[in-house]
Length: 171
Image 1 (cartoon, rainbow, N blue to C red):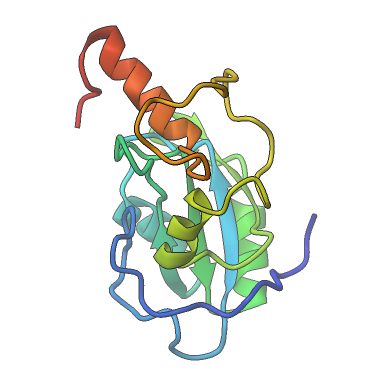
Image 2: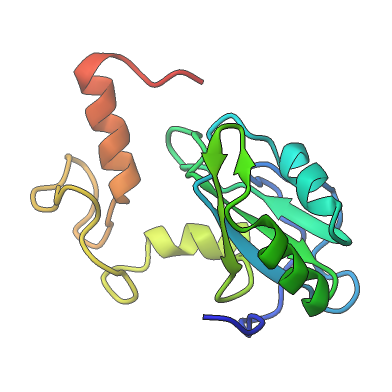
């Protein structure tokens, strides 16, 4: 834990973000330092996070990932600061802060946020870099139609299971 991220540089501005507070391109200026914010309420917005974290320093980007199929927030967010000092101060100040009834956990992100193309590529990559088997197992016999090399994400399986159990989730 700790230390600034050391992943690959950011790609072109993301088109389908799950909620971004600024339309700023990711390639502008030197790379910032990203924080991972866990236990984020589903009804929180990127502007809520930007406002809270912006009290501490120059927030360059806020991103709330969403499930590809249900479009529901995944329960965490990324906040990018201009400098490591601001990120460190924000981590100390905002860790265990309560936002919309939930105590958030703030840590340094391990690597820079992936671009939408990198995220999409993950679904089709086969067994190579996948961790674990997803929540609740669910492997085995595919759901008809797809080729043998096509691995559905576990979120798709959960989405389909919810549809079968009584309608689609609220949007």
